[in-house]
Length: 377
Ligand SMILES: NC(=O)C1=CN([C@@H]2O[C@H](COP(=O)(O)OP(=O)(O)OC[C@H]3O[C@@H](n4cnc5c(N)ncnc54)[C@H](OP(=O)(O)O)[C@@H]3O)[C@@H](O)[C@H]2O)C=CC1
Ligand SMILES: N[C@@H](CC(=O)OP(=O)(O)O)C(=O)O
Image (tube, rainbow, N blue to C red; front, side):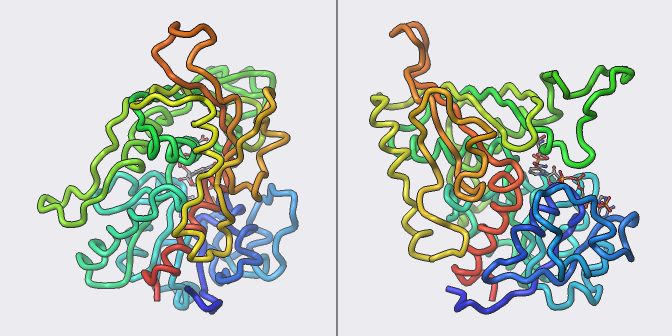
């Protein structure tokens, strides 16, 4: 429990696509107050409202808009002095060293970047899926002999996939998963994918088009899914704390002309047989009990919404379910139309908000959880 004390926080990479989402979600947060905004030398010294190219449909929060943007190289900068927590939405070209500096300076770092996801003592955490993995931060704290730690959240597509798979894995076990993504352009940050640039030698633009490649995305989905669904043993003598969930994962990733929301089709082979109704029931009844009892400000019941209509989920209609913090799952059906025609037991389509649950919203929930568990005092 936090007893509703206000905790000062900083946002690194505050001017980017994910950084803006942090600023929007933190504006009226019950526990957190943004007192520091960090970005590159292009933005340093400007007021936040002048530095940011604001893309969201809500206004720039007035108080945060008046903060002066600072650099991210120096955690001892006055702006960060009162921050126990920093949320990172840094460009992955610079996140490794900067996040490490903040950890060494004793800050609790909640990162969206890929850089530390595969470290042996850093969890890739989705609050409603593997909150118990946060225990490994005690290893980080002990190693550094201070309060600092890093918790990452997954790649945005992976987040949607693991939320939908977790209840199924718990109840029936997973043998194999094939994921086919249709990812929005906001996933590529700002300015992102060109809208129309046929002079580009790579013929890479998004209006009226589909681009069947997103760098490193397939690898991330395949690796991260197994770590998140896997186990944790903090007493492992070789310091190999995480063990992968034994499932085969194969991903196809595509960029499509959608502004927000990644839509993902899954084919799933289960370990134990299940009827379609049993799968729907387990998704509909997924209530992570510990999270309910902790009463986190932004966690609200089942993180999954099951849709029955056969033309849903759709980004335009469903991306903001649960304020963008719920995964919509629809088209839950047999592995093939003709029985016995496929080795898969099950197909479904899910939708995840890539900058809310897939990024800033997950980091904020992870921070809420760590406070409620007493990891940040
Ligand atoms: N977009 C998405 O859906 C998701 C993104 N992510 C990850 O989150 C991170 C941010 O992504 P996104 O917001 O899309 O990226 P953007 O490119 O939109 O933003 C990058 C941010 O990093 C800042 N920055 C760049 N270089 C430096 C530097 N040298 N020092 C300090 N700050 C710097 C930029 O500041 P300035 O404006 O001054 O240049 C900007 O604030 C990435 O690692 C990305 O992979 C994770 C999940 C989903
Ligand atoms: N690659 C994702 C967004 C992203 O930046 O992912 P990651 O956090 O894994 O780098 C997308 O394009 O939609």
